[in-house]
Length: 317
Image 1 (cartoon, rainbow, N blue to C red):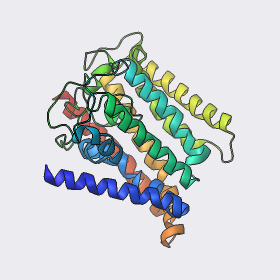
Image 2 (image 1 turned 120 degrees about the vertical axis):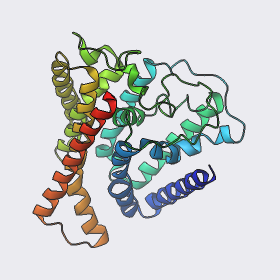
Image 3 (image 1 turned 90 degrees about the vertical axis):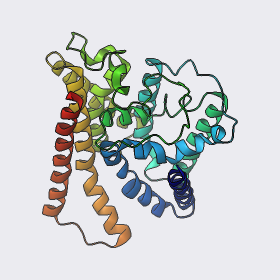
């Protein structure tokens, strides 16, 4: 446990240093955030989601009231299996496009945004029990964590709560493999139905997410705020329609695996060129040859496919 506490403290120190850099040297801070740190999160969720859940600096800071004995003792009404996933997904779909509006290019604004989220988490923990106010209920990253981490390739024990207080049902930290049960309000792998994934908020998120990810990267440069949200909404709608149609013949567990694999593959396919360009700009690395860049993109696609197949076997066990 001591090793994890040291690692958590280190993650907070690193986060604070990045926040300071975003204010004092915005261009460098944005490069570190969007080209170095954020790209590590999806792959860590695919491989060992417990590592990210244990080390997320926002989670560590938001749990300080619990560590020092000032945490709340009740569970918020919104932290139930239908309302919380809806709130978290809506927050994600609102926040991510803000990267294109302001957060990708404005270091101080990004730092202020992160500090606001930390403040919300801390205040929530002062009032409500353990992680029920944010990390395990309405954190906008939680739907992605659940989508990617139902059957972890590497299982890492939870290192925040010293004992379970049952602050939420279907706790991701306690049982990653069954947390996606909110797809069907209790059934882990329901059979195809007429409504398919659209019968629950989490199911709608699963159906919409791949199109949302793809559309985010395809938004034309210099688009207005309205156009940005229109693009990502259209992508999410197309994806929802496609996954719902597939749902007439496939079970929700299969569709969830397809969604996760496609979303991860799309993210890295579109991110690699940007990361390579930023590495050339800030680190002075040679420009990545087109064939090498294509090879890296293909490698990430292959990794996503391999992960999806491996997860299919694990979920079938």
